[in-house]
Image (cartoon, rainbow, N blue to C red; front, side, top):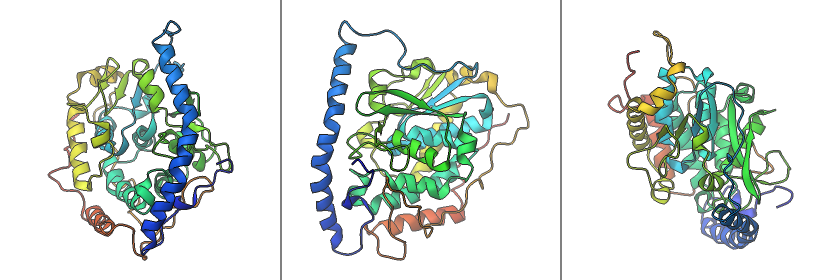
Length: 372
């Protein structure tokens, strides 16, 4: 816990009959220890809730954000339902000047922020990153549950550009919470590419899904968690001009929410195929185009006629044979694809994704570019 190393069951699984045994050892090791680790955070969460509804409740903002005069765009956590965010990103890239926006993200909501900051095509991200992430999650005990988000960190290491931290510094704002007192901390400066990856991973460290807090630096103190719990108590949506969220009702004047809102347990933890994810993106893009609040809030940033949106070949092709970079704090990732995989349907999933990548998405599901 103090050195930042993962538990023995959190690393890549060996093929063969040892898989089930490692699952059992993973549960015996992580579940009791995780209960002890998250107990102080549960007490702090209970005290904060009591203070909110008691006489000590404060009316101030949950966090102080700098005033730059630019519209603030916020993406909330969504779990594996982040495809909705990607559809909204597709519309924003084609319609508005992203350089004139202040971008904020919580948990996996930082992934669409990366797409906007790095000018990545969201359809290409879903076609390439998403199958790789699912493959690595299925190669870990309990499909990544009670781990340390190694699959997410390794996927980012595999696909992010080498200068991602330089392009993200000053434009991307990552929300974090300190363990165990919670609260909000905003990080917008990243010294290295690894610091950027770790900041995103720490923001996704949902207590209970990971077995311990994560560290922002190699061999650093693991004291950062997902700020989603704090965002439930004190939402940051009212501080934003546009808030994109998947779960629950919108708390801000211009919140973009699916109709009806998705269920966190049913939709946030559900695995989808690439065609299903692309269909979800197309529906979200159509909703964003017709959303009056988003159009009103971002109207000053509308692109001039004739602007070309980012093209699809913004990412390299999916290369599952590339070995992820190991980390002393996060999991090391799955074995090479030449060895047997943990789940029988993993190979079929990756094969389908690879075929989709090389053949291109289904034209019937790809949204058309609106006339400016």
